[in-house]
Amino acid sequence: MAIIFPDIEPVIVAHLVDRLADIDDPIATDVRVGTIKLPPGSEASKEVIVTASYGTTLQHMVREASAVIEVYADDYETASELALLVGAIITQIPHDPIKRAIVTVGPVRTTEEPPREKRTLSVDFTVKGTDF
Image (cartoon, rainbow, N blue to C red):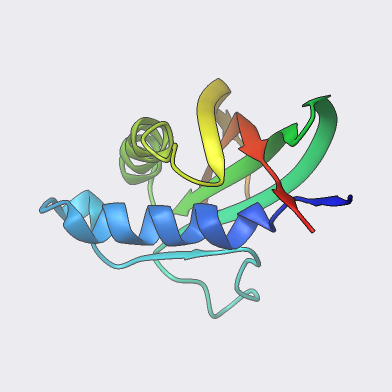
């Protein structure tokens, strides 16, 4: 019997898109969420980029995963507020196949080419696989 673990990047992206759409606040509007940053010159004013990977298998059908979530915005305040919001809503993701989500680091302010601001979060997940 083989155990297959899902691609969690689209699960994370869909969760962030859905939750941001539910929030009636200017910080949550017009946010592009994806797995690849738009090329220079075509950036969205607010962008959230998800990069996930798997780690150790904890037990039968349960595996650790982690994601780096990068938040880009045109100014300091927007980047900080959006990153804090993303950090709060990512922990609400637990449902099949993701059983747990914990922000372990961040948001951390990192440099980006001016005038963009960038924040980075590190999130650990516990993911359940399925029999194949």
